[in-house]
Each structure stands twice: as structure tokens, then as C-alpha cells.
Length: 371
Image (cartoon, rainbow, N blue to C red):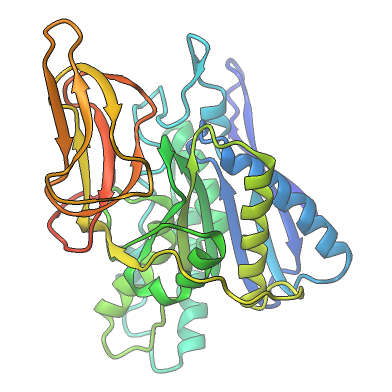
């Protein structure tokens, strides 16, 4: 194992910050895996999972059981970790720009469509190698204009040529769920089974240029553009939502890290004993079938339903209780589905997020991710 320190904020007259990555195995031999934790810096469960993974990967490397390259970034957002407002961490947005740390990554496909014109053919491995070479060049040429973009360039530069990318997050309150590209569904389902995910949400494009799609979507964008070339979807990128922000527990972290190691073993990266896949707890659902619900007016949020429960269309999931006027308004989904995520706040203003319900029938369009 070796570690690398990447300068992120290095102006002489302000605080300096660095990003640390840990590298296992041998580059260029076998598959490359990239794992990062907490690009939203206040999503702490991801960092604890990364801590457990780090110990296990060091042991496996010492035992000669890593067949490939694994890059682990256990705290992917030093900028966000340094942001505290009135004693509370604030790691989702860059305070200097207002930009979500998991949005606005460089999407290389448009430039690749130009630089690869006439250079791709029927040889899939040769195409993959050339696309990765060009994608690395494009990311390296990215000229960031602020510290947040410098961080994004550093992260994407380590991941853009990986075979597997695992972006570890958590929600406010939630059951374990995942996001991935529709063409990757079959490859990701075993990870969902191993981790006990209750929801696997898929889309070809979710909007906003999130990190996982910056790594994976370029492959099917190029496939759709170069119709005569053999371009397989060669980056299995997944956003893993590790339950809720307060689910910071050693038993969860060990369970989740073990599932990730099992997944890497099934992909030929780790030489460890593989257990049979557990029974699936979910089937893929379209991301555009997720219904986000908002508070109709200010008041106290009282849930009728628990996370992980199925709800019918029109069935009350929660009430918003105005303690001054006495007004009580039920909150219900217009489509049936699974209640999989909710806010941790119990007093809301009008329009604030209440919860999300994952259905089976597509009905949304445009940007499918919350800000």
C-alpha cells in the first residue's frame, strides 16, 4: 500500500487542504477499483465503512490476495469537512460557490466524440483502452477555477479509467439504497443483494453530472454515437446510500465493508472465499418513478409509515401539524411504492422535503436528483 496526498486548497494566505488516497495492489494488472467515501462530507457512515475497508485491504495486500488495483479515498471532501456553521457540519454544498459537491463533474463524452472519430472499430478491448487513454487526457486538461472544482478534478482523475467505481454516501434518514446506470443493472444487482439494498434505482441520465455518471455514462453515450464500434459499458459505477446520517455503527460498517469485499471477489479482484448470494431484497426500479414529497405548509412532521414500508397511492404517509392554527394536512404519494428515504427534521417550512417513494412506473422527466 502507498498513500498519495493531493493538494486541493494551497493559497499561501488562507488555510491549506489536501486530499488523501490509499492505493493497493498493482496498477495495470487486472481490474481497477475506485472507492470513495463522503463526497458529501457530513455523510459520516461512508467514512466509517472506508475505515473498515482500509484495514481489510491492508491485510489482504499483505497476504497477496489482491489481483488488480484498488484506490480508496476514505474522506473524499476535505473542503466540506472544514465547513462548520454554528457548530453543525455543512458538507453537501461548497459555501464559496453554493455548488453541490456531487454535481458538475466533467462529462468527457462530448469531447471524446470528436477526438475518437474514425479511431474505433470492432475490437472491444482496444476500444476500451483508447477511450480510457483519451478520457484520462481530457480530465488532466481540465482547468478548474475554484477549490471545489480542483477537488472534483482530483477525484475524477483517479476514477475515470476504473472498471468499478463505488461512491459511498448516505441519506438523511433511509433504508440502504443505490443508484446506477440502466446499462449496468445486471452487473450491480449482486452488489445490491450482498448489501441488502431495499431499492436499486436506475437511469441512463439522472441530470446534474453526478460523480458516478461522470465515470460511467460516457460509455453508453459513446456507444449510442459510434453505432458501428464495439463499445461495452466498461465502468460499473454505483452510488451507494448507506442508510441515514445517524446510522454510524461498527456492526453496519463491518457488514457493508464485508459485502463490498465479497463483490470485489466476485469480480476477480480479491482472492477470498466467496459466499453464495443472499436472496434479493429489491429489483431495479426506474429513477424517474421516484416521487419526492414536500410539506404543503409549515408545521410539525408526524409519520404514519415507517421506512421500508409499501404505501398505496393516496395513502397518508405523514401529517403536517400546524400547532398554532390547528391545521392538520396529510402527506400522500400519488403513485404506489416503497417509502425509502425521509428528512430527519420534524418541523418543516412550506416546500421543505418530507420523503421519497420509489414506484415502478415512470412519470418524471428532467433533473431526477435532489439538489
